[in-house]
Length: 69
Image (cartoon, rainbow, N blue to C red; front, side, top):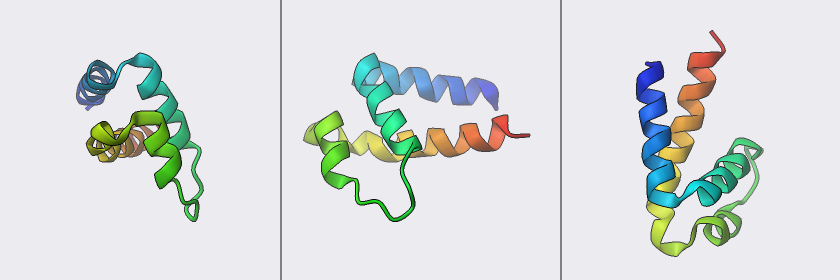
């Protein structure tokens, strides 16, 4: 499982670039459940790469689940 998590992280870093990925990752990881983030995340990633947001969210959930055990 750890290998798959790392592979997803590398893929996202490759597709988005390191700085954009880290900014989006930190923003999504620090969100509260009721925050409206659509404009903020779009300004970080850009409108053409919004398709990667669900994958970043998936990465965060997988890391939380895997590394808390």
